[in-house]
Length: 334
Ligand code: NCD
Image (cartoon, rainbow, N blue to C red; front, side, top):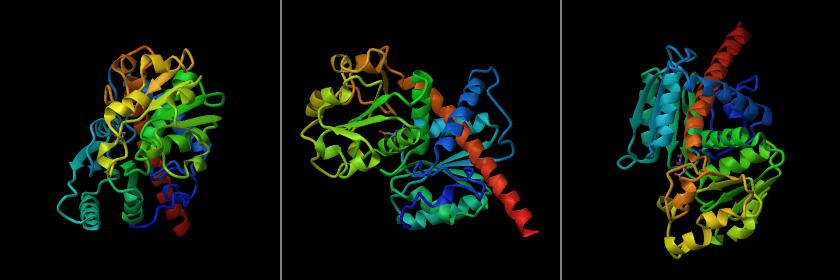
């Protein structure tokens, strides 16, 4: 598999517009802000009686999920439908064939169906980049989560949630709590918060679930929950990603909850108006107490709603970046 080099502008066209959406690494603040502003305008579409705009009419969006998902897949489907695209979803098993063959076979088949965009989720880090490098140039690739690497639409829906509830990023303290090591959401959130100018980004977790060298992201590292949560404006809780754990990284779930579970008492150490977020699926009593998940500080279900608007923004921006690139190439060929 090709090494990940998100800095090269594979996901941008010659004018610097989005043509794929693979990672937040290296994307400028202006582009992230444009995604948030576009998503804000699409939120209004979701509140209408007729929830459709014609931006992707005549286009085909194909969800190719090599890994399970409910929220992400459904919200991508709804986003594409609300943009008037034709949508198909494939659940592709990776069990029988080797990864490279499966990806190539799937790609060639989808190209033959003349799909315009693929939304890809895969258990391997780098899968979306790999596909973007090998697919025919007219197809836009959107990363719906690749291994531990990136989950850029989740990152942006989290940023929309923070912006809508806190007004901006400039004066905020944001804590990301739990299984940072296995979390593509944590990586995308750290990059997005940094790019958008958040001055105080904290990661909190047991040593065994904090990646080596995480300070490179410009974050403060805490292994004590009470210290890390002190006076924060935003708490982002993560799921214990058991399916990605090789072995004994944790004594037990009970021990994890005792030390890192977000309870009402623990949340009292954050700012009085702090918001609590979680990408889902939540594990009640493992990383978060039910009273917190369902309580007044929780914006977990708002995140789901905002996710549709963010995915509409990304799909429409990538499609228009693809169209602009084709026009640019045609003009330059003449
Ligand atoms: C996240 C994912 O798949 O990375 N969930 C999601 O997209 N809704 C986080 C998780 O699975 O814990």
